[in-house]
Image 1 (cartoon, one colour):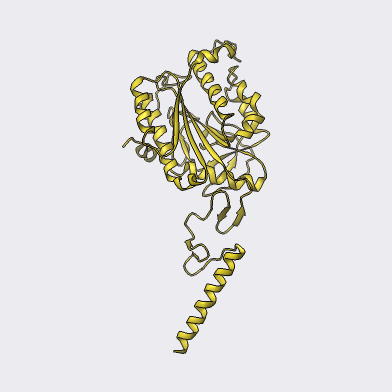
Image 2 (cartoon, rainbow, N blue to C red):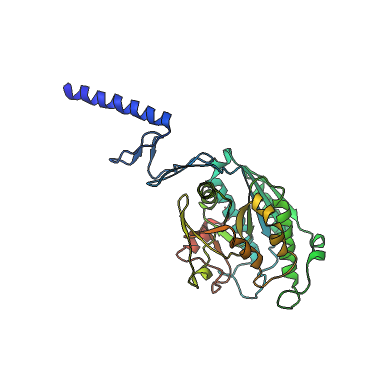
Length: 343
């Protein structure tokens, strides 16, 4: 009986202590079972709260001072063109439309995995398409009609942009029709980004995303931007070509992944509307003159801002298997491909 009374006293004291911790906004851990009694969670649960706090064990809590207000995803599609600048076949040797649809499906799967976040964050998916076949457009519309979030499809008219494009590129060669389409699509996407509220994710239609991608990018952006007191640029792909040279890189701890600073990306990345406006001339220069490499103006921005890439990757670039711009290292690309299949 005495043992029972002692146990009851211990239990009452513990409950009072937990309530005090809640009032003071402290977190405690029961090391016997890895339970967090204040929030009633396990140590491996999602501990962060979007817009409020980032909690990574055992690093502790970071107050979010830069909450994400909205996310606009702009997917640039062109299912009729297999490769932009080369004739080689893609990994798995499928029709381009197959990669376009799977890219869309993988983004939707990732959005649904992060669905709870969008109770507090506005979400919009915009597809800017050029010359995809009618049956592909109908399939895209059918997929979008079944989702919980806002979406729209815009048909690109390159006549709105072609007059701004220098017909001769940096290599003193004629700019191809495929590149004119690409440059016009980027220009249209940037114009749309200026109308957005907060974060904008520019993405090409040959990137297959993991289900964790969207959630990791949002929570990592909040955490690291709050820590660093500045806007960020996030690239979801861990490109193999960035390991071909020795250079310094800073390592950050995101929500569930490590992120490293990089100085180069392709044309898929996430940034804020504020950053888009700040570097408008640099960003739009890619739409007016074909640089070599094409992304050179982006790289100049990364010399001034933090551009980060996840380790391991959150998205796989399904280009030619021998391309240094393609398959990220230490990644199960086959699993990603299967999970992006239209059910």
